[in-house]
Image 1 (tube, rainbow, N blue to C red):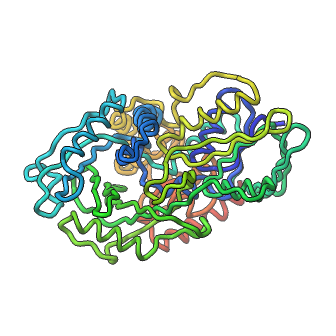
Image 2 (tube, helix red, strand yellow; image 1 turned 180 degrees about the vertical axis):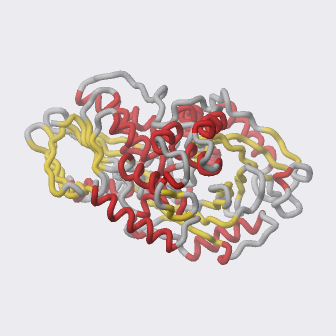
Image 3 (cartoon, one colour; image 1 turned 180 degrees about the horizontal axis):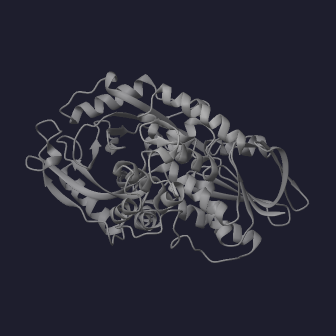
Length: 496
């Protein structure tokens, strides 16, 4: 019998599985689709304290999130790195004194050691003012971090598996029932139908957490989550510098413009209640218009629908605290335990975010320890994710080292591989020192060697998995390359 069975392969589920198996519990996890195929790959992709949450007095959440920035950066410096955010003062919205005070509090609460503090910018002189319309003169520049969200999930799962956890992808939990002091769990997926036993269940199904309670576990009437839709658009590169923008909107909300995958700018997000099936979420025409209008308020270059290269949308499963507006609903996580060691206990996980996922894992483990007893101590604050075993400021040095080892491969390819795989790039490349040795070419700089590595080590099964979650090369590879990739995967996945 397993100690713990986790339902859900988003960031919450994999964080719990990784922490638990690292402490010595026996663990399995099931995800009904691909890892990070829901909310966890539809974020704004930031590791941040949540500056706007200060306005809603979410001080505990902001403090915890701020403290996590450098912890997570140190754990995965290939997929997490610092960014500077430019917050222009917009006359008629929040006063400059309020912005300055909020950022002073943000710095004070942040526990910074490596991230630089806030400073004031003169946009008439600073490069950050050039892409903006005339009239924006004052701005504040502060620190937060970027994360490759889907890879963050996959690498947590990979580390959990390396430590002994069993990870089931494309495997649905059909039912979970209490029997003989534990849980009997019926699975249906890649390996066919299976039955497993576990002493404790963790329901980290994200937008489907209530569905698991009502359907899989046979309860009725559970309503704990408020689904809030957030959508983003991606356009061509709007400016040449490497900083992000944090913009205020006239409706009181905020949005970001962020350099994305070298050649693009990411704009988002929206905040609207969602009452449909999370599987069908997609950006609406109203959200598209909202983001374009908001961006056009600030940028000198006018954007239209024709400029949109890609868009994506997800639903955040926030704990339903009765807030009147979607943007006011708490972003904090809530954990609820039902049952005990004698009957079979479950921890239901509501809410959460990328930034606080490691701390959420620790909090879930505190609940688990009260039921199953304590095993190993907390460890993830000092642990590194696969490929992240180098210093947080050593990324460029690692790229140079990789270039020395593989002098005949393009520098742009080596840098991309280091960004995705860190030191595991050497395991991916092995003895392949030339482009010809990397096998079939699918477009951009994607070759069979990388695809085969993703199939063998990161649970990739489809072109969507490879192009939009393990990499973002879907932005650069056209239909012909996708077809070649699908044909290759059909033979490779079948062979495995």
